[in-house]
Image (cartoon, rainbow, N blue to C red):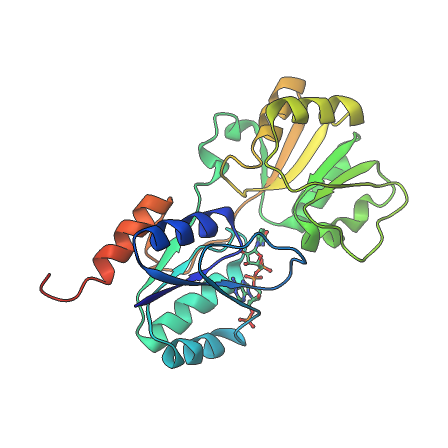
Length: 250
Ligand code: NAP
């Protein structure tokens, strides 16, 4: 019995280890966008499946007992494809998604926006130094800030050059509170633009923003497909695998 994990996150790697420790074979699927990805325990396959139909074919061709979609909260296309493909192939699907920052004590004070276009519009009205932490693939959506002093932090540099007024910082995290405070002081950060990634890995910037009075602009998460079974942590995902792959009558 093999479990397919749709990965690319720290949670997916933790889940692969936990299932392997419990004697369950796993294959983790990575999109293949990162040059030097952190690799999980167990087998790894890399690259897109070719849409929902491609993933459904892959599931029919491999002895997969269950799929866990542990992709990033903003990997909405993969999540939609997983729901469609698992329904078509008759394979149980679980979504493992780290909790949103909506529950953070400062969340009511943040500027919540629907998408990157709105985040860029809001940030352009704030006449201050901006820390942009929205992921490498989304940086291009902030071109209206081209003349503004923007500090762009990404896990991996993009081949596309940034505007001359911008400063690139390549760092993967996790980010410690003291280091974030120092970064805010060094660059005079007054605005943080982020997406609702959730979890603790990159949350220290939110505390640094509160301490320094910086404005936080947060892009809300995409809505998950209707009817998805969802858990928020690795132990719950392991329990679901155990229950959903148990032979009948046991
Ligand atoms: P996406 O927009 O939801 O998916 C775009 C396409 O990439 C999918 O249609 C699929 O291609 C392929 N893909 C995505 N995740 C895959 C996976 N785990 N295995 C195989 N193919 C995958 O995805 P994304 O936002 O670009 O994210 C790509 C990867 O980076 C994911 O593994 C995600 O967990 C990770 N990641 C994303 C973010 C983020 O902010 N979006 C942040 C950190 C990590 P086909 O249609 O050909 O199957």
